Length: 118
Image (cartoon, rainbow, N blue to C red):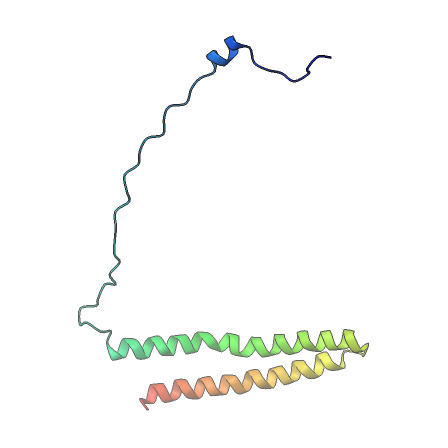
């Protein structure tokens, strides 16, 4: 019985190219990050107030859309579970709209208080 696996002859082993040795890499430098400080040490109160106001203004979209989408999804799931018509979807979507509008009013009141300086 002959072995069907291929084995290289001694001549073929010598003709295979050899890889060069891997060079030694230097150690990476140790760098410590230091946060740059603004020219007064701390950000100005106007900058801080404006940053808070902008973040609240950007949250308005999520405050409106989040409860509506969540109510519609939960209502759709309940309608599928209970085999009812789109009653739960419509009801929970309307409740989500109410919750979104309530959250919108709270955010706008908070923005107005920040603007007045209270």
